[in-house]
Image (cartoon, rainbow, N blue to C red; front, side, top):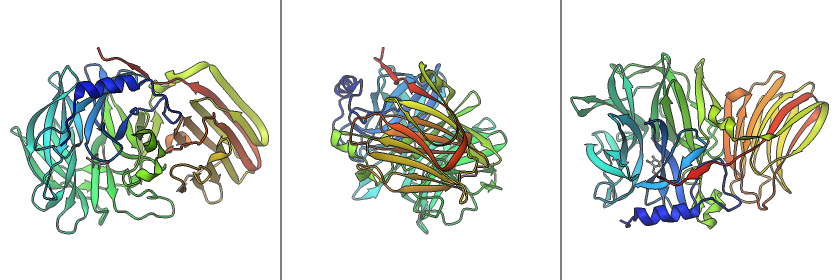
Length: 484
Ligand code: FRU
């Protein structure tokens, strides 16, 4: 086990800000060094949103898993990231894995998986902790010391939820019998946690492991978000190595059935999205995802610079007819630099070019007219990232083949457009997040342009578009303040 010196690591972090390298994003959380992954412990507590996330402060490998922490009231001003939880005892010596948070009796408590391996055998324990005023998490009681019977050592990522005043956990797991993915539910009874068994769905054989479950409530619907591993790619979905998606239905905590649930739907169609977690606060569901993908480190050349991965911007979720719509959190509108607003307006054109800023937001309404194929291209000099819509096939294709460095390939998904295609693009230095048709679909991805040039947006179509309407803004950067 490595020795983690919080003071020294925090000092090095503070020196790393503002982030300087040309691939470092401006309005996406990331670190000046080390590898980050899953958002953890998302909690609204004492007037602020707390965001923890997995972090290896010692290198760009998936090991030494710690939790980093930032706090924000508006998703624009953040406290300086700091080291909050790290492996330092026998239970979590092989990593402080993912988990959740809860505001309880004036304290912020986290619940995480202690990862421990003995002779190659995993002994996962679920343990509470409490955030201290110095920013570290005090390690408290272990509530589940090992995996239960009939479940393998792949048992992790607890998420706490409440129903009718009672507290439950959902935990990602793998069944021993057939080595398939599943999730277990626990109920708190007289200060102990009782295993209620597996949640029953109609998904059947659905991968070999489910990571990072969240159990949410939208009105009378229950939504289980989870990350199944081991599904094969299909023509219009599941095209990443691992998925992040959900089913919506009605969960009975008596029978453990997820009743009348929808099919599995992906939360994001991009290349770089995994392990999301959701805050539920004042009726809002705010999601933050990891912009990265396990087992694909070779796709991310920022490794050569000593850091890897980002988190998505927070997005607000809504459930309509069994489908989740995502919108950027409204707070992010304050990133817009007012004077920079540029209106786009054209009719009967089949091409339009618009230079962008170092960080931009673009709202576009495209009236298709007779056009059958339409593309939005981000040009980075000779490199390009293309979003193209095929009206006959009703497919959107994201094409990274025109980029030289980093992951390439294509992602294709179904999107129904009648007359108007609506897009909202957030183009950061490397991170791109696009909301399609007012959030019916979203795509998060990273590009690593070779040259430090501002991208240019091009809209083009096979025959003239009836109308192009839109606005482009320069976006300001997130601000980090020293912790007081
Ligand atoms: C998902 C995941 C979790 C685990 C964590 C470790 O990306 O594999 O299941 O808790 O990352 O960093």
